[in-house]
Length: 444
Ligand SMILES: *[C@@H]1O[C@H](CO)[C@@H](O)[C@H](O)[C@H]1NC(C)=O
Ligand SMILES: *[C@@H]1O[C@H](CO)[C@@H](O)[C@H](O)[C@H]1NC(C)=O
Ligand SMILES: *[C@@H]1O[C@H](CO)[C@@H](O)[C@H](O)[C@H]1NC(C)=O
Ligand SMILES: *[C@@H]1O[C@H](CO)[C@@H](O)[C@H](O)[C@H]1NC(C)=O
Ligand SMILES: *[C@@H]1O[C@H](CO)[C@@H](O)[C@H](O)[C@H]1NC(C)=O
Ligand SMILES: *[C@@H]1O[C@H](CO)[C@@H](O)[C@H](O)[C@H]1NC(C)=O
Ligand SMILES: *[C@@H]1O[C@H](CO)[C@@H](O)[C@H](O)[C@H]1NC(C)=O
Ligand SMILES: *[C@@H]1O[C@H](CO)[C@@H](O)[C@H](O)[C@H]1NC(C)=O
Ligand SMILES: *[C@@H]1O[C@H](CO)[C@@H](O)[C@H](O)[C@H]1NC(C)=O
Ligand SMILES: *[C@@H]1O[C@H](CO)[C@@H](O)[C@H](O)[C@H]1NC(C)=O
Ligand SMILES: *[C@@H]1O[C@H](CO)[C@@H](O)[C@H](O)[C@H]1NC(C)=O
Image (cartoon, rainbow, N blue to C red):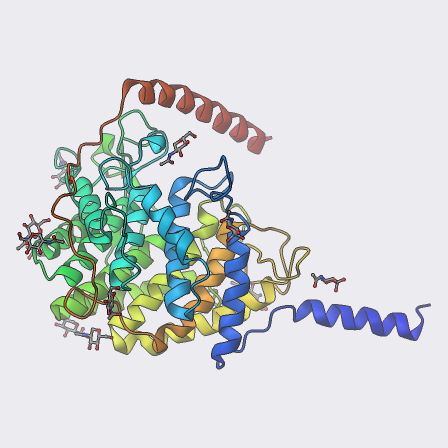
């Protein structure tokens, strides 16, 4: 028999635990507090500013691409909440990882970097332009716009008309697995980068590139125009006809935002319609009972990998941007983010700090998992509740101060030495062995 005081204490502890993070969606301070807590959670995976570590990189097992995505999330944290805590680290990271050609193809990443990976860092440079983030001030530093344009040029140069009627391959380098695969995310990346550059610079060459990427994605069948579902991709060996129909939320989210930027810039009804069609298709990523966001392809089975655990971050981020660019989507999008916040609040009650976020937000309570992607996703949901109280993304004519450098090399050759290639071969074999062993373990 429990004594009354023990019972009361237990009850109190349970109550405290259940309400470890309260988020009142109608109260800016409450939202900002939750955002601070999750941003802090994210940064617990960053050690790149310690001696001997690499600036810009998060701890193992987070790949380079996710680091770029994380800095973009923290740029969002700054402009949505006004908290400048991480700005210096964001800036130094975005400048450390530019690579020799100032286009986000650093030679250290020659074994991991695909077109999609590069795109996530370019997205961050674009955010810096559109939010008038502190300009680089070192003599040799490229400007944010230079980084974005160089990045765009290097990606556009890889457009591959020889296979499947166009499109980008997944990989940049021939020696990486997936070089023969064309995927939606790489083309979504090119599409969003082109759409944002078009709006920021008012240069219509970028509109044409955005259309090219969109048209191809539709023509090849990666976009299902009945439901506005985006599929994963296909191998070039069958002319991209053998399509992997898995749907990942970031593909739809990035196409959504690209369409919104294009409508905002061109005022063409075609992009307005596409924005709404894609937004409707995105309903597939909200649980039909609770209306809470989830990664439909892997979450319920609990088999999302490290990368996939961060995808909801981009869905929330690009829903927010869309709401600020195509204004009559605002209510629908706020509704999505508000119902999802209920899920975030019930999940982010774990760990020793009682505010660690789990992978799924559908269950009452924490699911005993943790990581950079989980914190990032929770942060993007709550911070985007504030999108209505900040300015829309700037352009070169509305106050964005980043301009192209006249003297920075915009060469887009991805020069990689033979030493890198040899290293890549060894690493690829190693990764393959690990994957095979893991697959064998899964079958067992
Ligand atoms: C590194 O970043 C962490 C997290 O923001 C911060 O707490 C720490 O003070 C930083 N260390 C240095 C040496 O800048
Ligand atoms: C590349 O790797 C080396 C060795 O780990 C490291 O010292 C350097 O900082 C890295 N550079 C970048 C841009 O990541
Ligand atoms: C390959 O696919 C592209 C895009 O769907 C199409 O335009 C082209 O005609 C196809 N080529 C062949 C040989 O089937
Ligand atoms: C527009 O952008 C394209 C692609 O980067 C570039 O080649 C062209 O010079 C730009 N046009 C103007 C007027 O700046
Ligand atoms: C995209 O497709 C539309 C027709 O569906 C066409 O009018 C437009 O010229 C195409 N744009 C590009 C750049 O291919
Ligand atoms: C946009 O959708 C509306 C309503 O379905 C339709 O009437 C209109 O023709 C569409 N516009 C374009 C450019 O597709
Ligand atoms: C929705 O709720 C009902 C009743 O609680 C349950 O049977 C069903 O499995 C739920 N569906 C989903 C998709 O969670
Ligand atoms: C573009 O976005 C701005 C800022 O939200 C808004 O004022 C403007 O009406 C939008 N343009 C269009 C065509 O919707
Ligand atoms: C977390 O919750 C447990 C159980 O309620 C409590 O004992 C512990 O002190 C809390 N830790 C923190 C850091 O709040
Ligand atoms: C953008 O930044 C520049 C340089 O720091 C500053 O002069 C300008 O006032 C800023 N513009 C806006 C709209 O904040
Ligand atoms: C780049 O060159 C153009 C034309 O010579 C000039 O108008 C512009 O101010 C220069 N920009 C910078 C950042 O030096």
